[in-house]
Length: 317
Image 1 (cartoon, rainbow, N blue to C red):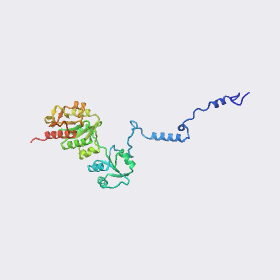
Image 2 (tube, helix red, strand yellow; image 1 turned 90 degrees about the vertical axis):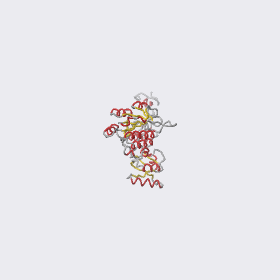
Image 3 (cartoon, rainbow, N blue to C red; image 1 turned 120 degrees about the horizontal axis):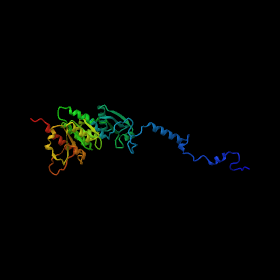
Image 4 (tube, rainbow, N blue to C red; image 1 turned 180 degrees about the horizontal axis):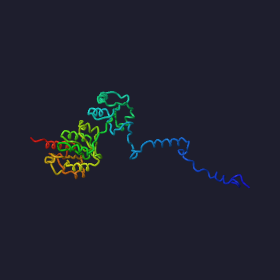
């Protein structure tokens, strides 16, 4: 006789399967029709449309506004005024909506107009993103990326000149003001170009451009993936390599190599030449100093050495 509970003869086991149940309840985001499921699918579609980052997401990285291609901006009224006075190559000027006018804002607008620079109004949140959180006082200048040459192209151009080539290579210089000052001295004393390493060194920024007083617009600058290899390429073309070193074996006054094809290598602030670069140089030159002065700033040392090289290269009457 069948009872009221449990399977009985002729049920085929349906009752047993009902007692076993359907398993645990799926999560809301895995149940079709649930709002969480639709949100998950929409997020997945958006992720498919966006290109993946080459090295993974960066934490705490400032978000660039749409359409901004430059890696550098100048923020703040005084900084923007100085950049425009120095004719720093720029792409656009962003001004906050309803910004309070003063003499600096008026000058910024006038100089931007004189330079045919695009002036765009933007919200405070967009300016915050552009400046990476730095104080901007309602104005941000987007700087044009500098147009570097290849080392091979710079070397070929200098070898075609009628006079002996003179290049200046910087080994780990990280201060943009030093870079700008060295560029200014290089142009003043007849150098034909600069060679900068790509890593652990400063590039041509707005600060470097201002410090160079605009000479970077006329002085070719090449960027080397490997500075030691670039120096060896120069040596293979007949250029001698002279590195500035406070502990060098030769005084600058005795640098007879200055009259021929030459690369003057300037070391980093404080540390000087790196070991591999120093070993690559044909000679390491020191500047004779009087008194208790132990060393010179990198840009000052470069200026002194370039002035001596220019003196030796002048035609003797």
